[in-house]
Image 1 (tube, rainbow, N blue to C red):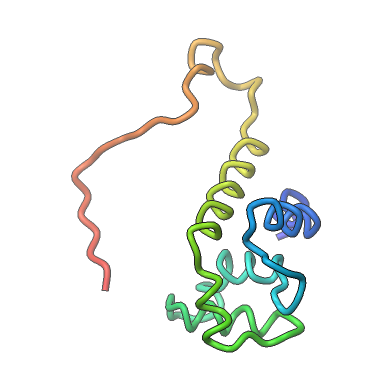
Image 2: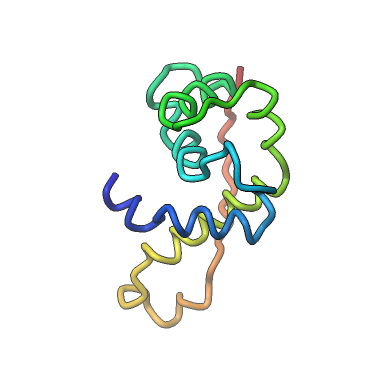
Length: 120
């Protein structure tokens, strides 16, 4: 947990959310608690539902979000924001000295296999 909070400090989470327009105004939404509810929310409860993520947020944040307020924040801008955070994390964790120079040109690699996942 300490490594994640060092990698993603609260200031970075809030500032980047403002840059992308995820947060329209300062108010109820606490961006660090919102992000961590999606990262760790399914670990606290067995259900991986949006209601479970909202419960996780409300249990850690200072202010409660009602269902409508929570669900209206699930936007394409939020998806872009979370993707940016994943890229930031991968960029920070990757150790360039251990990668061979010939392989450093590859940033993204796509692997296809025949795995079938059934979602309920």
